[in-house]
Image (cartoon, rainbow, N blue to C red; front, side, top):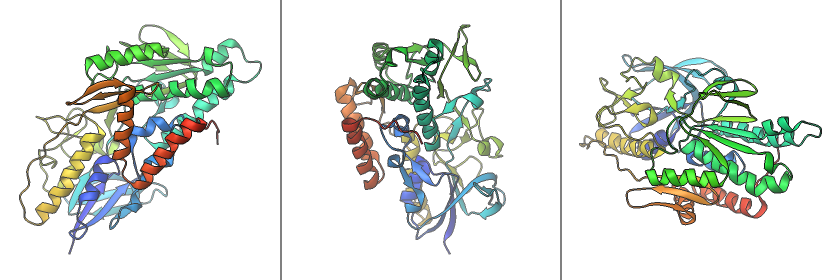
Length: 407
């Protein structure tokens, strides 16, 4: 009889593990409310139409010899090896048994309990989030084009605010700048002088996980692009019409995208499994949850106490690949080595056909690095279909511009 293995999640960690696990050894079930794998690194490109949504997702049901269940896991009963789950649509509850469990549920956006953030801002974690932002961006330009509105109303609609100077916030601001320069000027003539993009970051600089010179270069490029970067600043309150900042200033806005940090999911927060004060599961060097015999965890929701890894897709991907291979070996009675993380570096797009590369071998910026950025992401796409669609989208955007239809 096959070992019952349940995977919670469909992110980089889970998907990488699934590709390695031997279905001849394991009866594999996947539980997740999201029925696709998402290339989150390219998600900012979909918010303005540079890429289309379906180009960066891969249906989980395309993975062979596994059973997918579209549901949330509510509770993990590690004593009896049972999962309490609820269907994502019908809300019907059910129980699943497991022999081995892999937790790869990631994290959720952290609003830091700031008044109005959850209600009025837009997060950027899922395709549904990107679609809402794309609709809102177009609505802002259409609203600003209505005859008879005041100058102040027009400027309010055209004030785009991004909170968070990490890769997600920076890349969204960059994509928005490209959209304004390459498409808005042609398709919404007369609005370009009233547009304002504001990036708010609580730290001293942008992209603090990158080399200091690359962070400085990003600030210089954003200044040239007329993106208003507010460092050492944070939002204290958000209303339907205004944003309040810690320096006492406040201003009206058309769109607020919140990319200021992550926190544990409800499952991890309520779990009795060992976790640290950052609401991350504590795992050992074999990616097993401390104090358990058959529960493993990978990705953003985890931390090894004496060796914290960067919270990136790259980390989750390498952990998933390692765990899938290790579980195959263990099932065959073979010895396994502890997980070793190899940092391949980070990439980020900063607009105007310029990108950053922060790797051990190469630290660079500019147009050539942008070409490198695109080539790396194409090679990282999981299927031939994704590669063809992304390349076609880039070509289509270059030739015809971005689609500003709203539906």
